[in-house]
Image: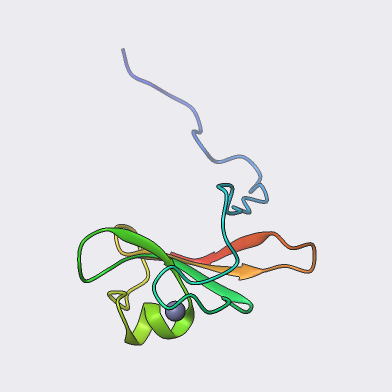
Length: 86
Ligand SMILES: [Zn+2]
């Protein structure tokens, strides 16, 4: 049987993704506050961590955003972390 019809061609929905797990408002590797940007990124040691920009790009983080590497989140006025890259 052949599948027909438009799949996934409907109107583009707003697919905003927010960080949904409990999160301390500080970097897991340097313990400083994230500020407005947070990365959920693989570290050079293997495990993933929530890191500030500095650690993600120049510290323990692998410095890459993308599937399997890391995601970038930006803090919104309502306090939620919106995924903006990765
Ligand atoms: Zn840090």
